[in-house]
Length: 292
Length: 161
Image (tube, rainbow over all chains, first blue to last red; front, side):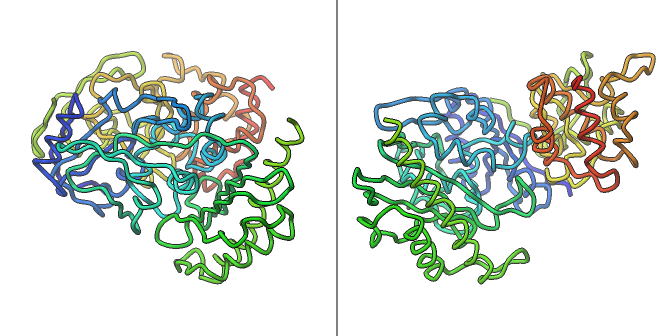
């Protein structure tokens, strides 16, 4: 349970970090909180030649609010994010997802960007970003590019990041009017990896029908993804329709099988959690209209 | 930029429980091993070594977090609180430790150091927690012999509730 010998590098600027990535390429691991990578290093599941510690890069720890989006620097800690009112009220789905991320003792160190770069298929932060159609900013010596979250995650621990790129931040669309948000998951213990997690963003029109719907699934397939729900736009936002959507999605998924759950069990979780989050999101959306 | 070669031993100075101490670490040395084997502070326990069990939790630069997922070279210049810093120098237990003792909140004691350090930071942030909040915080620790009820009771007592 000790890592392989590696060179330790602590750059003082993003440019220095990028130089190191150029030098080591895929032989380097980038460490932020280290909550996932540290475990993999200790178990020697990863054996890097160099560990690039980006914790000294203060420029990656900032929050930038825009008109329609808010941008979180890679290094914002999960617990720190929970203490940022602008982020929590601006991105309610993230606020609902974060208490499920690990534990008090891991959120204090784990980062938003690290979780996204790691790309565990059951992780909550990637799921929230995909559900909201957010984006990931990457920097390389050649410049900066932004990748839609729905294209960034490509499989188990696999992303669109190239070996010479650093994830510098995440872009979160701000809450929209007449829109409800909900997040639910089942894990063996609170804070453990989700066996299945479901997130929803639903806009309900003035006549009570679904105007827009995004239903994200985590822990089901090899990456977080949004279910195909276009056929339900225009239907009434009722409990019955929530059941109908959840049942249809549960039939369409191709679930992972592991020691914790077989495919049928995950499908059942999609049905149960899907219905719960849709109902909660419908209520959240219509409640705002009544309040207004 | 700091670069340390894989087999290079780097001098690392940290302030542990208010006292600056130094030792040597190659990059891959875990903070837990540095505390125990370089500094001789055996109070911080090594359990799963992958961040799951919570036994190694210490307060590192003001955050209760896993010391097995940290490398000693990352912590040069930082301030760390470990279980050795809780009792008075004459061995008198502090309020939290007394509460654990009085409530039977430990049996073998392996997980206890980590739980005490989490609870110390947690109570600083949330001096009057509800039982649910205490349980949520404890979800980051595995205790296999006491049962958590006594631990919840001890933390509640330490918070003066």
